[in-house]
Length: 309
Image (cartoon, rainbow, N blue to C red):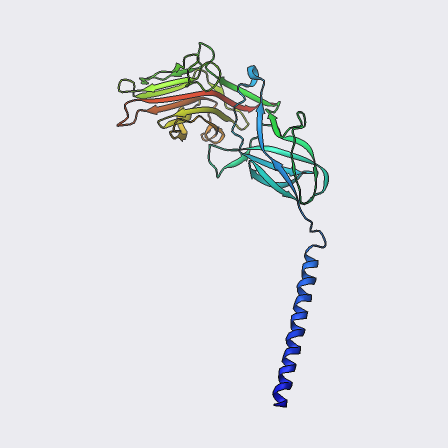
């Protein structure tokens, strides 16, 4: 009995000491976790980024900015889908640079900062464990605004506001380009959008830009708004001294009655074949079987590249 009681007492003492040492270890470990360079983060809030344009020089302010590429004091924090709440291990006032991000070719897996938009520069006072929203440096509102860079070159623009349209149907196209009537609910913005109707008598559509454009030593993007209930192909004709290539770049799916904005990268295709010097943009569609009528709407075409030095 004595031996058993003694063993029991020793066991309790050991358990108590083990418990005390465990608590001490956890406490010390917890203290060490918040020492050194580790801090409680502040949070940067970004609602959305809009575009301002000089309409007659740069066209519509329509945009599809989906992401923010964020730098704090020139340190890259990452790419964040908007709206965003971003942890930042800073306190006090710091410079924040926000590059507008897009989905290149409309693909979520190819998110890039759009090189023809300017970054938003603003100072933010970071407060640990608190959210501070980035404010537009001019309006001081949470609605951030970007502009096109001064080096952006608008090679071609078409908004369908003029009677003359800078797109020509090609040989073999049985459908043609119309302008939506003034005040039509089909119009995206302004007075008119472009419209193509495909039916049994007009079942094939293809058009190209009226002019050829020089292939530059710089990235080239086609921006456009579109609304279609059938698939639409966008591509380029590239021209050399003795050869012509027609290359599709992207197939746009039906949008279910919704207008969409897309940024199409033409650069790789324009440089795919040696000896090519000029290009045209083209669009093509075919009436689908079993559909009595298809309507394709588009607006605000822009081919954007960079001015040569």
